[in-house]
Image (cartoon, rainbow, N blue to C red; front, side):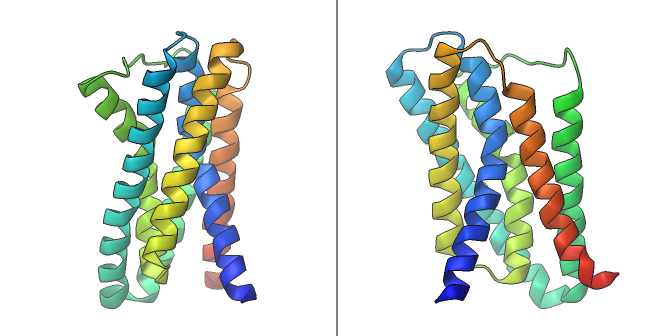
Length: 185
C-alpha cells in the first residue's frame, strides 16, 4: 500500500513540474482577459495533450526497456536532466516570449508546445514500467488544473511569477533525473 502511495506522490510531483510551463504560459495568456469559456477550453486541450504525449512516450519507453534495459534507464535519467536544464535556461532568457493566439490551430500549437516535455518524461516512466493509467490521469488532471489556475491568475495579476514557475518545474525534473542517475555513480 505504501508503495502505491509513494508512486502516486512521485507522479503528482512530476505532473506538477511538467504543468509549470503550462501554468507560466497560462499566466501570460490570462493577461489578455480571455473569456471564461475560452479558458475552460484551453485547459481541457492542454490536459488532453498532457495525456496523449506521455502515453506515446510510455509506449515507446516500454519498448525501449524491453530492448535496451539498463542503458535505457541511463538515457531516461539524462533526458530528465536535459529537460530540466532546458526549462531552467529558457526561464532565465529575456525577450524570447512568443505570442500564440489560443484559438483553433494556435490552440493546438500552444497545447503541443507546453506538453512536448511530457513525452520525454513518459518515455522515462515507460522504461521503468510505471502504471499507464495512473500516469496519464495524473498528468492530464494536474496540467488542466494548472493551466486553468495560470489563466485565471493571469487575469488578476500582471505576470509576477511566470519565469520563476518554469524554473521551479525545471529544477524538479532535474532533481528526478539526478535521482535516476545516482546508481550509475
